[in-house]
Amino acid sequence: MSADVLNTYQSAVAHLLNESANAGLMTPFINDLKNYLGNITSISTDLDMNDWNDENTSQGVAISPVQAAKCTEETLRTQIFMQGVKLAIEERLKTTTDDIHILYAGTGPYGTLLIPYLSVTKNPRIKVTLIDIHPENISAIKKLINHFSINQNITSIVCDDATRWQAPESQQFDIIISETMTALLKREPQVFIFAHLCQYLSGTGTLIPQKVSLRAWLTPFTSLIPLKGKRNTDILLKEFYCLDIDEAKRLNAADNSSFKGRMQIPNGVETNYRLKLTTDIQVYKHCKLTENQCSLNIPLTFLPHNAELRGGEYINFEYITPHSADFVFTFPIKKIIKTKIKLTKFSELNNLGLPGVKHMFEHAQAAKCGCSINIDENEWTQWTNLLDSLALPYHETSVALYQSQRIEEFEAWLSTNSNLTLS
Image (cartoon, rainbow, N blue to C red; front, side, top):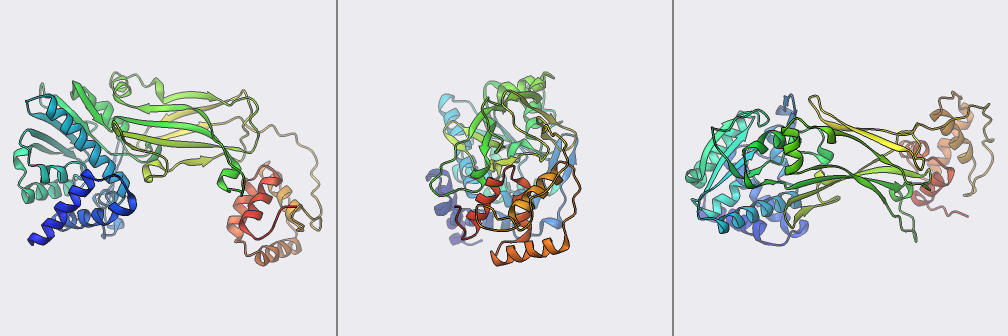
């Protein structure tokens, strides 16, 4: 590999480790990084993920080598994790003259959070144990170690399940790194890797990330459809789960009481709210990732059609963990008074001066309550003709129609997605 290509890689690593996090400015350096590492390992982000297999473990899914490589392409995620690891290492180096010992579980093919830093630092006091469940990743990591001549930093490279691996007797680590998660700690085994490995952390050691905070909010339905001149305000219910060193130690001691709980809906909440779940990640100290900065922070907003948020009642949650972990929520069920349903005539106009809107909205509400009402073929034709005239897609309109709990919500959606104006 030419000196120019190596210089380009080293420049990319320097920018990512030392420059302010910025998705736009840093993306070219991310591209240089992943292209260089892909060439060395022969595991390129351009490969088809369908040709590679995930590994299903008893504690979650270990994503395939190519999917792990593709995670590098998320600029802020990669840069902020790299900077958090760098800060943790350099602070530790300043506080002791001893070697520092790092355990990195779930390296992927590139060891992105640590290998690039080691490749430009060349500090022999950093001693690293690397673990990954995929033999292909282990092979790729070995290629990088040899290529960068950083063998002096490597204590051990292990192909194993990080939720079961046993450290050598009396081995303690100053830093344990694992980034094996998705948003809301679903599917992948981050929680259980930390729960198992925390027993090998020294008394003054740190986990990276230091904290993963899951919070629940009530968000107005209209926040999904921003309206001009109106500001939507989310209502925080609670932090319903937090993965940090204290929680990892509780789980290691077989205390999983935090996997189940409930949160109370505030009095006065209107029915047009949804539940929004967010994931905030403190990688290390000020190095943080928050809402919508990467795929790990994408919020989930939902409310089952048979649920109703009523002030004073509770939303229950539980972390269900066999094979593919997920938080499951149960809500207060709608109180439905069954009466004989008579729909508004299709010809009746709504606040937008449109026929059929009231009729189709009432039909959707009846369907959600389990009432079976047929739509006349002529009415369906009139409805599709109306949507065509407004250039509204059938599927998206149907989703908005069924998600809306009040006709005003659906009318707001129509107004936002067409040139119509509410009267």
